[in-house]
Image 1 (cartoon, rainbow, N blue to C red):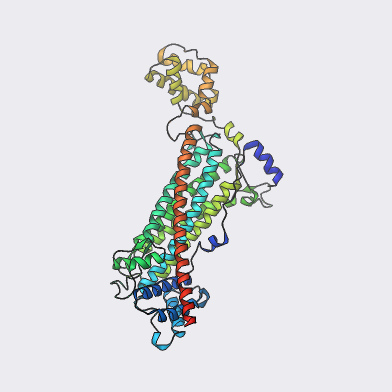
Image 2: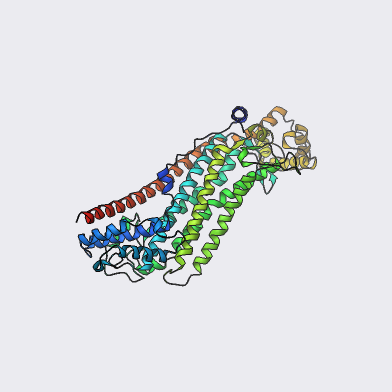
Length: 505
């Protein structure tokens, strides 16, 4: 779509352009932690703990730190298992040390606790990245909801037209459960954000630093209290997988509904060219919102992947995870990374790619509107009929409209009078102007003043509450990411300082 066309469209039907959230190179690089990097980070933290506990003296710690500092992510294959990476790093460190210090770097560090800690470092980082992307997409959805708090449209129930709503209110059906899913995800990350380091193979170790201290150095909230649970726990990973599914599922349902709107009313929504596929020579003039449909399918596929992962986790034998650490890391971090990418696309959709045709939707808002509740309220308020009589007259009137295949906008005083004759034996002589004003879709919405209704004032009030709640979520995410970055920087600084001391001695 050209800039000139976009400007014209903005003036006619209201187009939202929101700035893309800034993502620095440092932030993007820290969104994911490689397996090799996590293995190195846990080894360096363990070494720091040995030095702090006095298990190795300062001189020995400095020499070991120098060897650890020389390791890099490219020292091992990115496809290697955690255990093979552990052995490769251990061998590289030992090869740089004198005979009397070989094996000291891994003193008191069991493979199970090392691998379990690596898994949690990776999964926490990737899950936080997915939560951040979902929160940004939710901000974009809330902004579009505010823009379209007064955009009338026809509501639907199981494919049939019902009471009119607004496009902003329609989005609320996905925004609210997305917020619930984000809260669940952060709570699950908090449970995941506990350190197994110091648990040994399952019974704990007799050397090393205090577990609470090493947990804090790695950016964890606390150590896992029970050392058997520390190396055998699967429920923390189950909770993250299920939470990632709960974040994607409501958005997939919304995108399915938007795809239905485009198929049934192609003029209702307009998408940027990148989201469309031009027809081929067999279907001239045909276009499809291919990327929208594809994104909905990808979000649903994430739900299926999460369900499969939960099933595999719960079939593991009771005890330490062992070699299962590798496929858990692959599946869980892969699921989190896919979720992050999908919500990048959701953010783009609602921030820049989707335009809502306000005039077209409003024109159709009253068509096939078949509720009798407001007509009954009108008869009670304007004609002073009793509730039971008003309900009977309204119901009979609406049945006659359906039999004549008429919309509610076509209702006339004669329809009401004929029904009143059959119910109370007299005509009501309703004024056409009064009846039309009462049943107009916009007036219909303005009378809905219950909390959370599609009335523009109620929608805006709901938006403010959701925006404040989403900001709290984003603050929680930022706080946890900062804690992880600061912890890693502290470990790196300690290794670098200790390595320099080793070079000086």
